[in-house]
Length: 80
Image (cartoon, rainbow, N blue to C red; front, side, top):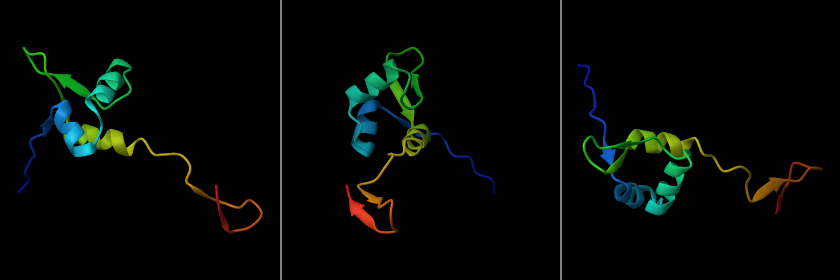
């Protein structure tokens, strides 16, 4: 049986509670067109995000570099 899932909509406060992204940061990201895709509720002023969009946006933002980097002269790791 092919069951389709209903998208899960989150308010900015729920995104903060689940992922730890402050609401002000989400607002700034919206203003700069850099954050996860968001929607305005029809006929209302509320903003919401789809859970799948937030998860996809987070996983598309890898942190470059690590604390321990390989030593260029050997295969050993050294503290930065």
